[in-house]
Image (cartoon, rainbow, N blue to C red; front, side, top):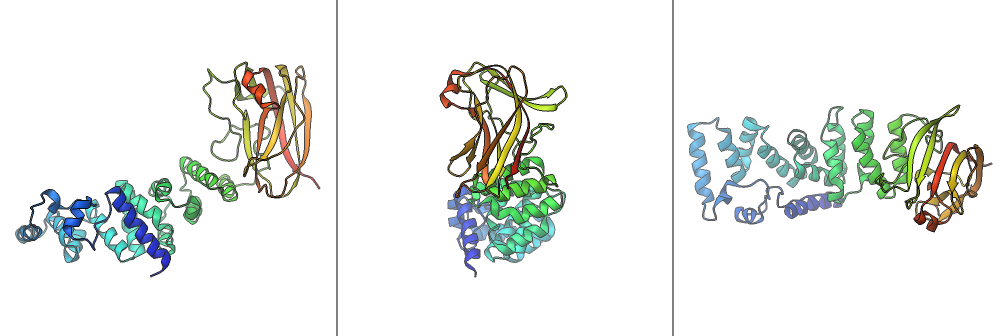
Length: 383
């Protein structure tokens, strides 16, 4: 038995006990199962004085009178397993109790393809949360993961509950990437699941994998700054522009996309005089080199600020500031260019955040007035 398989099996058992919904434990007697309230609930747990052998005998007599009594076979299987379970499966293979028993037996025997098959049916047909949690843990077992990949189809509904269970299973999202790659090829990754995957990968510090997944979902390459011309709506959860959620009635900066004559889409920020939440807007960018130039155009109207605004670049890891543009102040409605040459320092990593902020952080607390627009933001490699 491999060490990974042992860890997976023990992890599944521990999860079941902790949730008091776990698999029927073959190594425990019936009294122990009743004490722990294990899953599924046993008929013999109804009363501490129930005689299990008497129950089994009564069920056999019931079956003798009606061999097709599926409920009797299921109850007997929960007491005895063995041949009773096989018969219960023939008569009522769609019953969730039978599926749980079969899955539990396969897990105990480390028959991973069979266990995956039953667990997938439980999640797909019954939205069974403990089954999804078990599958999330089994992602760490190579043969189980291979079986899950083989089970994926373009109409599969079980993958999303499994991904959602991974934080509870304490399994990193990165471990599910082989499943995700297959699901992407089948076009079986809905937008909500994609956002959760991206959020999970970012939280784990897997920025390269998150960016690769995002690009794969788009199906084409993108510039270093995505949507820098602001011609399309923001795509939440990926590597597009992000605005921190603030109630409009309390926002010191109202960020939206607008249309400018002769330019098309632009980014517009209206300052209301209230305290401004920083950063005002941001985008995570992936930079594999170390010498770049940031460029773009901006225009302000009636902008009241002491030191102005700036676009700053920071390392995602550690938050170190790499560079920031010269202060952006009032231009009386005239578009002006801006440019910043910078080097990415060693140890920064490939993930940086480009964010709009006030030059003086304390100025944001007092609030600003006026309007600023941006267009054609680009990052280019410097020779």
